[in-house]
Each structure stands twice: as C-alpha cells, then as structure tokens.
Image 1: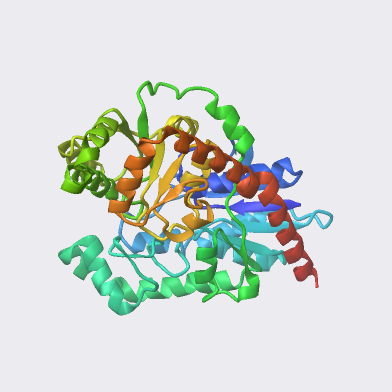
Image 2: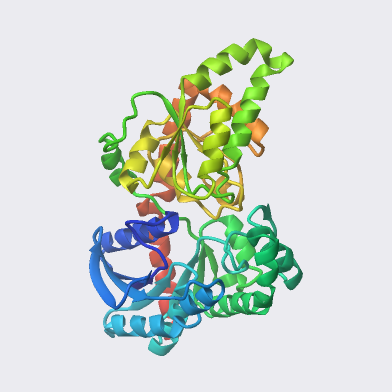
Length: 438
C-alpha cells in the first residue's frame, strides 16, 4: 500500500507521540508498504524533503503570530486547506496501489479528511491524547484536575487557573472560538473512515463522539529487538556508575513531575513515623545511596530542584537527551518512576521502559493499566503515600525488581511488538479500503 502519514510531531526532537508515529511508519515500511510522513514545521518556510531515521518525510514550513488563540487559529483553521493540498500533491495516486491517509494527531486530522474526500481514499486517525474533547488536549481543568468535558462555564475558571486572574479574564472573549474549534475537531474526526484509540480508556471516551463501530483499539508499538540492540551500549556522555531511579517526561503537572516531591516527602515521613521507626534506617540508607535522575525539561524544574534538595534527595537533572540515550538509561535504572497525574492515553515512556526490561512503578491513570499488571510486570499505586511505600519496598527487593523487569520485556514483545501490532493496522487498512470501494 501507499500510506501518507501526516503527523503534528516527528523525530528527532519530539515527545512520545512523534516517536510512536515514527515507530508505526518504520514498521509498515519493513512490511513492504510505501510510507511518506508530512510534518507541519512551525517557524520554517517552504517545503523540505528529508530522510528521518529511514522514513521519507516532507516538512511543511509555516509561520504564526505569537498571540494566544490567534496562534491556534493560524496553525489550524488557516493551515488545514494548505496541508490538505500538500497531501493531495504528495499522493501520486496509482490505481494499482491502494492509498490510505493515516493522520496521527490533532493539527493534521482535518487536512487528512479534506484530502481523503478530494482523492476518494480512506482516512484513518489515531488519537493519542485528549484533543477531541479538550482544547488543551490534557483533559485537566487548570492543568491540574481531571474533568470530562469543556463548557463555557468551565472555561472561565480554566482560563483563570491556567493564566492567572488578569490574563485569564482578558482571555474570556476567546471562549466562543475555543468551543467552536473543539466542535470543528470533532466534526472532522467523525468523518474519518476509522479511528484508532491507543487504549481502552481512550476508546471509551471516543465512543461518545464517533460511532462505536468506527473506533478500534490498537496500541502504540515498540521494536523490542531494535531497543535491545540500542541499549547494549552505555549512554553517551552520561555517567551512570551509581544506582539511580529514573523519571522521564516533561516537567509539567499533567506528567506528574510535581508528585515526585510528594512521593519523597511521604517516603521521608513514613521512615520517621513511630510505627515504621524500625525501618527508618533501612529507608534512609536506600534512598541516600540511590540517585534520582530526571530526564526532561519544563516549567517545574526550579520547583523540583528546590523541593527535592530540601528533602535531601540526590537529584540530577538532564537537559534534552537523545532518544537512544534515554533508552539506555531506562535499561540501567533501579526503577522507572511514572507518577502521571492525567488520563494517560498509552504513554510511550512505560512502553519503551518495558521493552528495555526496566522495573516500573507507576500510577494507574488512564491507559497505563493496559501496559502494567500490578505485581506481574510492574507495580501500580494510586497515591503518593502508597507510591512511596512501594518504592521503598521495591528498592529493598532486587530480585523482585529483576523479575518485574523481565516480565515487562516479555509483555512488551507479546503485546506491543511490531509483529503483533502491524497486522492489526494492516487489517484495518484493508477494511477501510474495501468500504470506500463499495
């Protein structure tokens, strides 16, 4: 097949959504399909073609004004017809080679639908976060509290919580646009021939917007063999001689970065309490001998540096780190900490950590339970206090950590490996091609 893969983000500098799109493109190419990615490139001009880690890629440059909401309109509504035309131009339509457009995110979904209608070809959309029902795509009110839907009333308090009283009140005239914009996202999503939810959690939410028969649960994938080859080398330029805990992700509230402070405070308090005094020396020894490596950037870094230092935690903050080196750190950590605070769709962090054989301690938010079965291939705890107690227990049990890591790698291979996931995607492509033809 000929597959056009429009995606908002793509390697080398991107988060999990971009790497998931790249993993899909690479795996499809290995199965003999022709794949071309289209990536909107903010701040650039013109159209550039390049090879991105083996995937033919077209980067479509554009500029937007640096004004809230106006910026969003410029990169979405104004860009949609231009990106649709770019997809039509890229199609190189061949009647002897079935064509599918598979959009990977919010900015590129409407253009994919528009291009599909003009070309008469099927469109598949993958949903990897909360963009179909939340303007900010996190599903968090004020970037803090999970909530199901936005309304005019909720946006009033949401803007104030996100932007502060003055800027939040100044943004209130944008509420009609925000609500209309989310409706437009949903309008285009409903016109897709199939919608992939990366977890059961996302699928439940999508079925309130898209007809249930068009929603398909297909997880993000990982190349377990390629990761094993990568992690055989040590991290480049990053010394990891001492035992360390690892946090990977943006230093933002939805990723639970702030909960690291709550966890270590609870760990300290638990060790100092009367009922656990007998264990306090052991806890102190374990935590003092195990460094916390924080791999990610974001606005919470100053807060984390200050609070973790005050708690006596040996924290090391890495700036932007190459993806392969992140994998190498995962393969060598004592525990990967994943205290996510939002409704995780199906995060790439625990997926890749599983493929690396890392023992994982996570909060069971959103689709994380699709990856980790508590006590079998990882550990799940819903509160900072429980997380702290489980952390201490696991640090004191190296054999259990090793067992969890081995089971995590096996689960990654059996449930999220390319040989498991790609046939599901191919079967869906065949179904939508047949539906369009008839």
